[in-house]
Image (cartoon, rainbow, N blue to C red; front, side):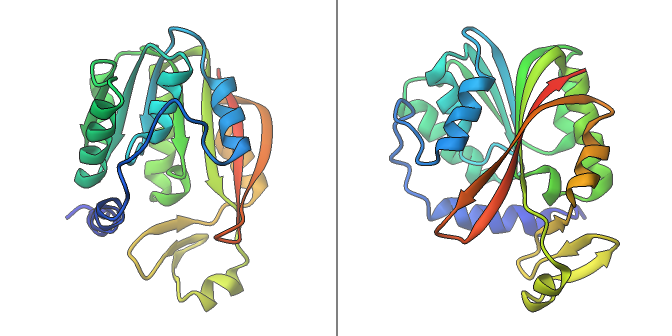
Length: 222
């Protein structure tokens, strides 16, 4: 059985409750994410978004000038919503949306894409799968290509205990929902990234309603 079966069920429930009324030409509400996507997109570029969910980041990139994109997610409902949004925004011919996991990446050639998105996915996988995902992005994105990487902030372990997250091993936790959380400190993130990518910029993104901070990295593929 896949370790992500409960993860897919969780996100299916989330996406079932999300309104599909979305205009990809309109700016997102978070300035740091908009600026990150502006940096990511070059006119006519090809793009891959692993863990795309309902595809909104990918659609924004199309609106900003990306020519084509591929979105991958394990949530059937997320991919369904993404297809609906691609259709209503009249960009379905520019986006290929795939339901699946890491195994789907083997279908793509080396250096196939100009850029990529990894938004809140690397620290929500088992560590061995996160490492494999970064290796695959290094393979399928061209040298010098850009990657938009967003991670959760590091959380004090005592806080995770209060949230009743179960420690699996080391810094890996499993939340009550069934989601995995790899609780990465900044220095561990650097160790994880520097083998394959050059870090151009790091930005903190505040989500006020959730009282959370995310870490946004601007990466260049080596």
